[in-house]
Each structure stands twice: as C-alpha cells, then as structure tokens.
Amino acid sequence: MKVLERVGFVLVRQSGSHKIYKNKEGSRVTVPYHSGKILHPKVLRSILRDVDLAVERFKELMGK
Image 1 (cartoon, rainbow, N blue to C red):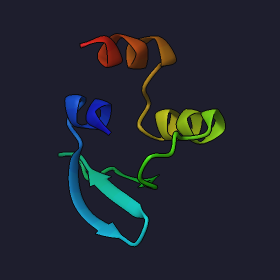
Image 2: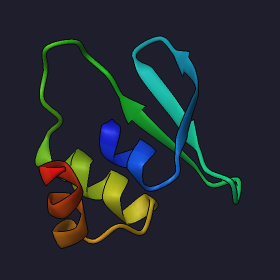
Image 3: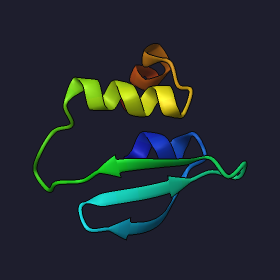
C-alpha cells in the first residue's frame, strides 16, 4: 500500500499472499495482497488502527 510507505513503512518481505511492512520504530503490519482485489473496509480499518492512522489522514494521503 502506497499510503503505508508515505507514513514511513517499508515492505520488508512477502509471505504468500501477505505483505509485511515495518517502520523505523519496529512496528510491523501485515497486509493481505490479492492481485486485482480490493481490501474489505473492515480489513482496511483494522490496518489503519494498527498503524495509528486516522481515516481522514488516510484519505488525504490517498489524494496525493
């Protein structure tokens, strides 16, 4: 996800259909990845909660 990269996360590896991102503080988030599919809103909300990112900020970053 480009938004995760914009807030400081880096893709460190991929395990099957899951991408694992880390930031400088060592926080880790796992994102399911299925080519051509859109994340379910509840999954997206869970990821945003894990990285402490507000929905409004997410929308701002998506616009860039």
